[in-house]
Length: 94
Image 1 (cartoon, rainbow, N blue to C red):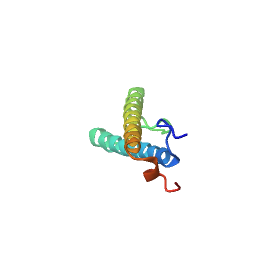
Image 2 (tube, rainbow, N blue to C red):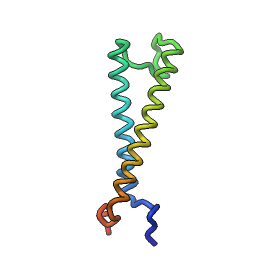
Image 3 (cartoon, rainbow, N blue to C red):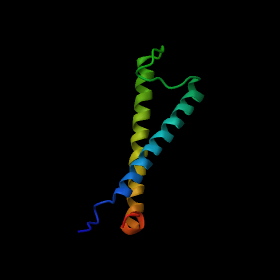
Image 4 (cartoon, one colour):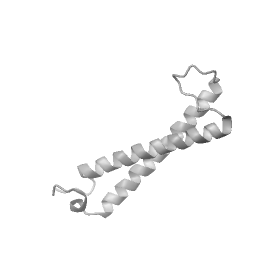
């Protein structure tokens, strides 16, 4: 009944938490880097700032790409970690 492709609930939760943490860290890094380069925070779609369309597109593309890569790497890393360990080591209910 135990399938090597299936993940335990704990592994899924850890993977989700790692992906969210990675996305948050990347967003914070982008915000600090953007502020250091331009002198202001990156524009957001709902801001009423005077940011141009080019700046909005650049910020969205950069943020989207880096967050997506960070989430994929975090999820894959978590999957590799959980695959190396026995399900019983990760699931306290067993």
